[in-house]
Image (cartoon, rainbow over all chains, first blue to last red; front, side):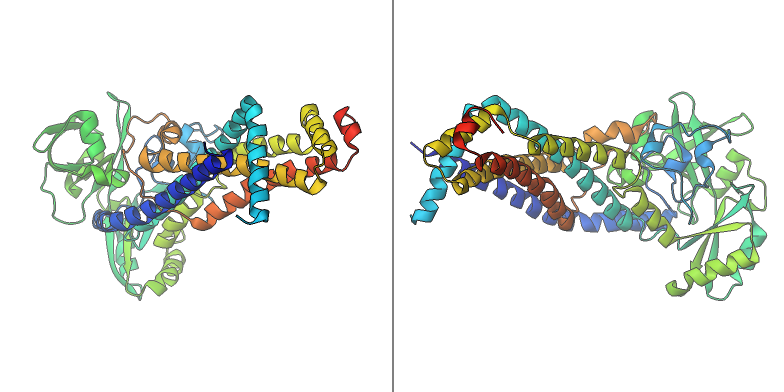
Length: 95
Length: 380
């Protein structure tokens, strides 16, 4: 019969091993993905793209780097910004 | 085994048995703790990976984009500006860019239309993103109609569908020829959406940008560095909803730790009293509580961290998708590359484990230094 401390230490060691494995996985996968990312970067350069297509609902979240500071308020200067992704990508700040 | 190690093992055995007697409390504690670590680690992994990916993907973005502003808003730029800008010392080329947005009322989706700057497309042909192709059920050779600004439909032939792996850049993209885009959007002749400026020496970009503003005060230059900086700011953990989520998780953890630090339960106090009356020294009790803290905090930290990694890098952050998608119909299906900032992981470890250890030991020390008889009776 194993002592509780032996079982706990084994579980803790397994958890640390899993974290180490995940970090090794992260290193290996980021090294493996880099050529593909660079290929996509060349595509972005060739097409002249300036932004990620992460949020497509509003123009200032689709092109955060290109939008003007009023774009979040659309056609109503007094209206509050109302797109949900605006919570994640705020209107551009002062450059 | 050395006596010191044997002592530690005995105390650890006792701590584990004591914790297992309060199984329900232990499980709820580990659940709350690991959830807080999971939320914080998920935000940390997600934002750092997106920031790195944006840095790499946009490394070849236009060196300098020049927009014309009218009344604080982006306006088409006259092509004469391009001629004057191309004469600035250090500028190696100026390319007018044509792009805009198209709202597909049938599906409620927004597309980004952009003209190619080379001859890679023929008139009447378009290249589309994989997300859009999937949404509309399109493939190579299919016809796709868009409504022009004159109210008339224009039919294009899909000549290329971008790879789904590039979805993070191209999901909603429609690339057309300049002529087709001009006709579709009824762009007035002699204007472009903005200008892409190439600079011979990268160190002169800022000087060229300043010269452009001197020449054309109504223009706004956006350098590649500005683009990169935008993404660094957007995916910074201090911005927008990330701050709200992170601060909620941190506050929940602070309240939870404070609750523990401000006092221990009557049964725990009684247990300490019994241990002291059976000969345990204050030092042994502190060791017991230290082990208790280590067991709970390390287990929760490891569970939260492993869960966050799986959530972000194996399942592509499903919990964040609804926020990022908003009301949009088109959302890129992307698999994030696991770029990890180990410094952030170390900070998360220090901020989540050490305060908890402190919150476990301090009240126990206060209980351990009082008279055992008093402690067993529940006195302070």
